[in-house]
Image (cartoon, rainbow, N blue to C red; front, top):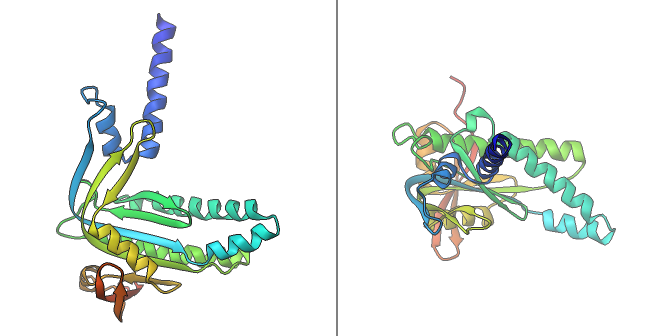
Length: 240
């Protein structure tokens, strides 16, 4: 009986670790609660979330070229190393307000301010942290290019606003976020310029108020949104 109890405790601990690897801590805690019904839908409305899409713009060309030489696996290995580098960066303490949402092909999606412990309504530190993370990814990509003799070009899009966060699926639960804010952040990436970080007016206003270095790109045609004024993020606040 004692051995069975120990095995059960080990299994429960393993399941907890597994859940913490695929869901944010506060969401995992909800799913581990004993009183929760299996068919209960988990969702949360968040009023001011910063959303980032970062894509390697020329990765598909790189893959096709290598696949023709039977080196497609090497290409995927390199992509895995790049994503692993990004994962390591987001796990740094200074980016604790951020949450990786998912990767879609060679696009990395992250957000900040998704719960009470990471949302800073007054200081907007969660928004600044995502901007800092975006700039760090650009630096990391330059480093990767220098050391792998490649010329990957990254486009990053940032936006802020309300989202709905939730978990879909039972056997393979997937945490994700939805809403117009997410769609526009994705458009900031897709309509962006290689090696630049494009942000919306809402994002610009917060960052400019905190002395980040930005420049106006001008009006951009955005699918489903018409014309939007956008900006490029060039750097953080000047040293004090």
